[in-house]
Image 1 (cartoon, rainbow, N blue to C red):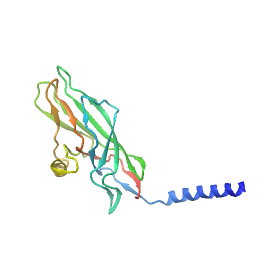
Image 2: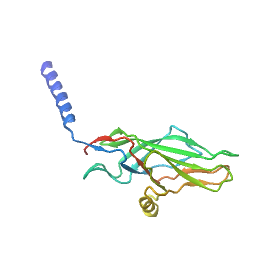
Image 3: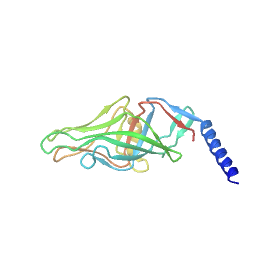
Image 4: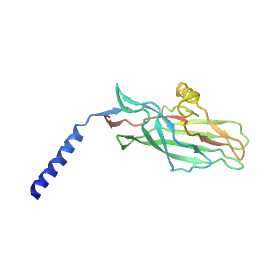
Length: 194
């Protein structure tokens, strides 16, 4: 009896491997646009480098006419750098990148461009967004469920950005929850069909 059980288990395992091998996949090319809505606020005065953040896809990822990851799919990222503005001089800095996307409950690693926000030191009047890597997009403070902020983010595309800053002991930068941040794939990635 145990021999039959062993044979059945081995057969089931082989069938699973064959099924996985036969699963259709799609490749998203380098440069593909990934528009993300942040789930939580990210602040140069509160977060530190290495911390992770979560967001959701604002638009579906498509390969040709096939939806690979639907709108609302979860993505994770990390803070490459996070520096608070100094009391006397030195501006604040936030640099983000995506690390993976969840498809079918499984995380798939991705490599994206970085997104950087930087402010001038104390006494300066401006804050600016600085793109690192190829084809960076816009950051716009969004409103939950869409609304005016989300509309501006979609329209702004890669050409403009709104940096959020505060006065006081140097100008801090922050990305409010529900903001739209655009990244670009730096390396092509192969993902399973939904």
